[in-house]
Amino acid sequence: MAKEKSNTVKIATLAICIAVVCVFTMVIKIPTARGYLNPCDVAICFIAYTLGPVTAGLSAGLGTALADAIGGYPQWAAISFIVHGLEGLLMALIMSKETITFARKLIAGLVCMVVVAGGYCLLAGFFLTGFPTAIAEIPGNLIQSGVGVVAGFILSEAVRKAYPPVKTISW
Image 1: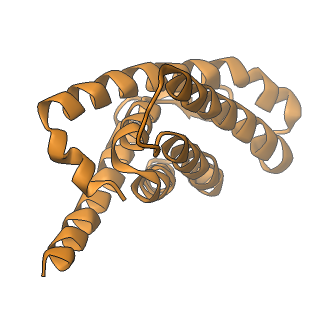
Image 2: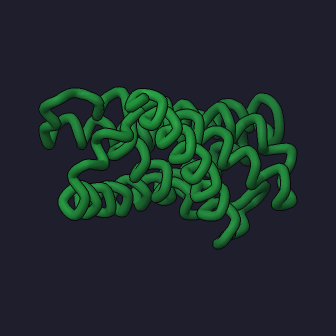
């Protein structure tokens, strides 16, 4: 019975995280040459630092893809699903060890920035905008993901201190 309750809480948490990532992606849009910048990485990094690889990967991919699909940028949905899903998954896997050192946090943050900037550059360059435009978007993507790393980490630390049982819903 306890395991069923635990899984129910994890599934509900996943659904809420998908919605939170979607809202963070849609609420503030800073237009760029072919897309937009947004604070989605704050939510994604918080989830990756706090709730584990399954929740981070699925909520990041589905939340951003959903936001693109319903927010006027459906051509970006598949790319956002892949890039942000991979971002959340990899960050959470790096952070999933019992002992989380500063070096591990730094590596997770750098992975986030490389995956977001590199992933969008490669996939958009091949499939949407061409490489000159995709390369021009790299600085904005680095800023977006860098802000997400810092703010997401600060939020995660605050939540972990205020509510230590949050570890039990990690998935």
